[in-house]
Length: 506
Image (cartoon, rainbow, N blue to C red):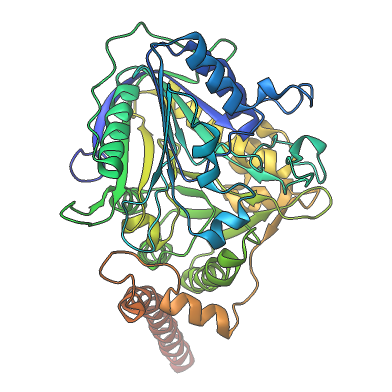
């Protein structure tokens, strides 16, 4: 079992129903249907929040009642017993400036609403951020994934070049963005409520009581993808003021990579963790190891990420290609029809179509031990064909929507050719997935080696030379694999020479 409480996850709970919501158009639609079902409690944890966010951009532009802030105001006005709590990261000014809406302004937006308690989370080590994206309703329904509620996040699976529905209040049309969220009902949602209350306590010193028992709820029009499944919840928490470090997300990723037999499919905004990359490199060097397919962003939207994460990602992917002794590695970036980059903000892992995880955790150092993160995961039993079939269909849905092809066509190509990368190349007639194969430059190698801007713990936050040791683990793994390959080649050449000499002697 990959999901082991206390090791690779925090808790394992039953989920009565689970829906996978691909793109924020689906997430916002489900959110618009779910919020009015609340009777006692709505708790939101987020990296970013903008009350002006329209949950249905296709509705009347002049109808401000469709904005999430007005919706929450109306709900607490109509239901005095309803308490809404919102906890958002108190981002530094340079980052807040790029968000178009300072988080401090949200507090002023709700100041006159007694039923809405808006707080900024500053209870973090210096330089760390609160990155969990969780929303819990009455402890019976919850959302968890990588999506924030903000004006620049909505998009459909078409990822159109210039979609007026992606227009912000400032009149800007945002870049296309890919996202995945989960909708969960049952005891697993209650567990996420416990997580949210603990996060609130650490940030505000206020202890919240669990929500009184409520009747099960589920938003109308949202079909569940899985029913009565076991769900694992994995966290990241930094060591801070007596609070112990929690690295369940990293442990779960490493365990999944080590156990993979056929295929590791990763969608992630950042792929810069040398620890995860070293584990992947080791599997790529094994003769019978799994295929590794990564989909990531070609170019990050913010200047900080471009300077730090983009360079480090390019170098890390180059080292994984160097470790790929058997031709089982490929990395891709999605493009629009007009050849513009699609921001991959999702954090999805699929292993052997038996393991699926979705959350807020990036594949970088910060998400392993410096920021707060929360992921949920489903591990299908070998005899649970329904779950295995769904995970396979969802993986195909993710890839085929990038390729602008039919999922069944991609599945047939994969079955015929055996390699998912070859199936992608064959199905990629419109050029919507571009290979990330550009060799890294000196700056990229420097950023990758020292992991600048990407601390992994409170102990190396201001000591980048300690992070250099992590990068050396990946470099050494690749070099070891190359040395073994050269030794095998020399041994093969020597054996060939002996055979030729023997034949000539005869």
